[in-house]
Length: 329
Image 1 (cartoon, helix red, strand yellow):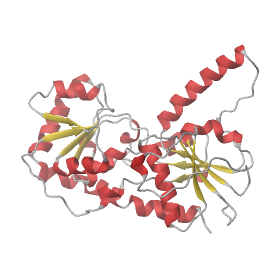
Image 2 (image 1 turned 90 degrees about the horizontal axis):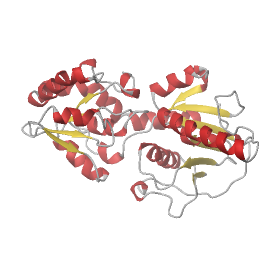
Image 3 (image 1 turned 60 degrees about the vertical axis):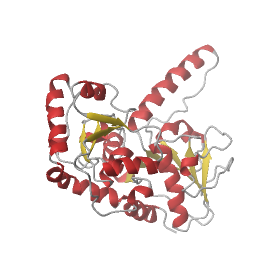
Image 4 (image 1 turned 90 degrees about the vertical axis):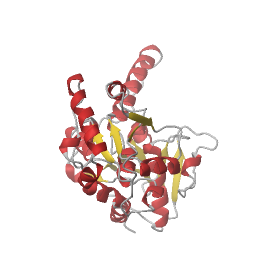
């Protein structure tokens, strides 16, 4: 159990200037802890850069710290992308927040290869990486059900895993009532950074449909677009609970998704199986058929997404309750 004291500093590690789901979750954590009355919360950007906090996150309250003492009272929140720092602070309490399992594996493979090359040529150095060892004062937060499975598969007991999920940008939660849609607006939304192989094949197979990429937009613009659209399609890797999937359902978009990463688990993407597809070339006709069914019969399909929407609308409250449970004053 994390031991919080009045002398504790809560220090949140974060990459600088990044505007993605993980860094937003880390800034949300800072903001929520301030709202709960913790004044000793700090962002620590690695590597250090000027103006490290992205402008997009100015809605979240933070203060930055550049250096600190390795002390047993301190609580360091470290995203899975920075597990190489775990052994650097042996005295401090450390929480690994598993926001993206796939990102951890990619970075770990890269660092191990790089370190192996340098070690062989220049010097002999002890391994600084974290390999799920039973280290003292190291705690685990799973952002998704999928990441909790990953931790258990690597020998972390379920009793040592806390489920701590972030929430979508508050701008998407301003109106929680059902959204009235123009049923003639049969555009399909997608994230061009995800499903880079699958989405182009679906677009090619449906020349009569209009696909709109969500790109170069701020949160307000994305919300406006989603509030007018009937369908969001996602075939990304989804290493954690994806932000854009949650944003889309908050704006009453139906969803058709793949079964990659967290999307495969109902606990993470609470939509009926009929809207999830294991992508293959032979499945393309069935996926396009389902897309057209949803666009042509939106009023019949949107109730199927109510369970998922309710979960998304309550995520901030769930997040707050979990933090109160963990950081007991």
